[in-house]
Image (cartoon, rainbow, N blue to C red):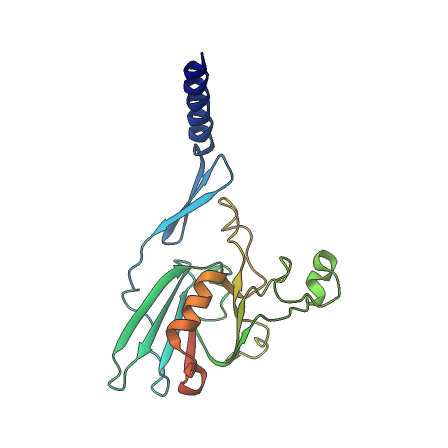
Length: 212
């Protein structure tokens, strides 16, 4: 009887596990496909290839971060002294819609990389998050583990940043839960990005290019 009970328990566990991994939603998001499973977990599949023809970076920088608003992708490069680009990694991002860009190519320079930032919700978000500043590590801190402060060529863009996030939106909400203007990626990915570009990257020059 004992072995029959163990066999039955194993069978039930297998069925439950199989049911939890049942796919319930699939969404194409830029270059990526987000799959949501019955257990609430999600998997992201997508292209890891560099964009074919990104905008040309400025000649006086040693690092460039491209964000393609059409494919919802971020790709970083190191710029060699001869102008050649050494690719880093391509990752999915949450960004505003392509038509939200004021022009096809928007450029900015990173002036500071802030680790474990405090976030003070703007007036437009205070009803949801409150008026008090939110400390690092708090799940409500929208900046995540890192934020890039950027000086843009576009007037009024001082609050537009590249920053981390604890999680991506749920599958099905990637295209509907747009940001308030910033571009965000997972904390694990933005920490790897900071590691790739190195401690002296801001002094060497980092250009951020949003394009569509």
